[in-house]
Amino acid sequence: MGLLSALYGMGLSCKKRFYGNPKKLPAKVISIGNLTLGGTGKTPAVIAVAQEAKERGLQPCILTRGYKGKVKGPCFVQSPEHRSQITDNNYCTGIDAGDEPALMADILKDVPIVKCADRYRGGKYALNSKLLTPDSLFILDDGFQHWKLHRDVDVLLIDATNPFGNERLFPEGILREPFSAMKRAHIVVITKSDMAAEGVITAVTRRIKQHNDEAPIFTACHKPAGLVTASGESRSLDTLRNKGIYAFSGIANPAYFHGTLKSAGARIAKSMNFRDHYAYSHKDMDRIKSDAAGLDIITTEKDLVKIRGLDVPENLSALKIGFSIDNDFYDYLFGRIQ
Image 1 (spheres, one colour):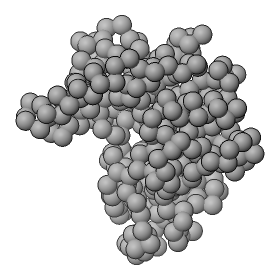
Image 2: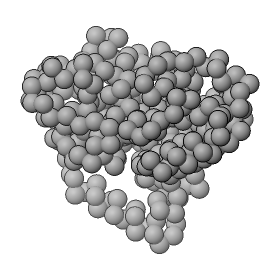
Image 3: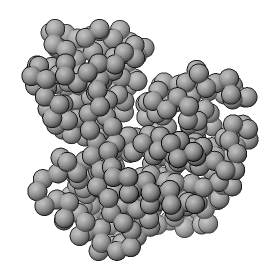
């Protein structure tokens, strides 16, 4: 381990000791997070767990940090249809909320989402709004390293297409914590398993069991589920088949996005990659339209949220992604909080 990673690891240990005993909300908490920086598919997983919770008669509420959102919180990130049920009128949307919370609010119109860096404070805020009750279920977005809040179940996601990078701690690698942190997980999900090279799932499973031989391990896929325009119109994936397109994104793993487009039958004629959580400008959109030169433009749902205030061309759509996992995962997950 290099000096920078060693210093980071020391700081991590001090941070854990500083927080001491985590605070507990008067409701069940499921955390969904990862061991690495970005790209594991947390947002589709959080959305899928919230949707399944609703199907099972539960009342989910998502607690999120809202990375790079301008509002520090706490505030609700909600669709207009749901606002009449909230009494304090404190809302944040779009760039103020952060791209991922805004995307979750677009899809989960009937699920409260609270943005606040301090997730305990955010949870109390949600309960005080009277929208929730102590019987509600909190889903902690990107919570594996949020030690300030007690959780009843820790779900750890590991990306099969890039499980651990060079196996070094940040900033020399992509690990947020040492491998030993896996022992905290109650459930492990290997995501994007359909895109993994042969033998990767077996190797990753072996590594997990070295540090946690009790948590069940599931595999999940992130499958294309259609297209959506800036105006909210749905389009069929068939429109991509055997068609040359222009793809752009500002996400942690653009190679996976490109692979998913190809699996849907698209031919990527041109592409452009921006850094993760990139804030697009009118100039960027003009450049994209110019580079595309008439080709249909495809981006991610997360990026679509960030460009809606710009001059979006009619031939631009976002690829919708669905989190696909065996029902045994949900049975085990929700069985733990009964």
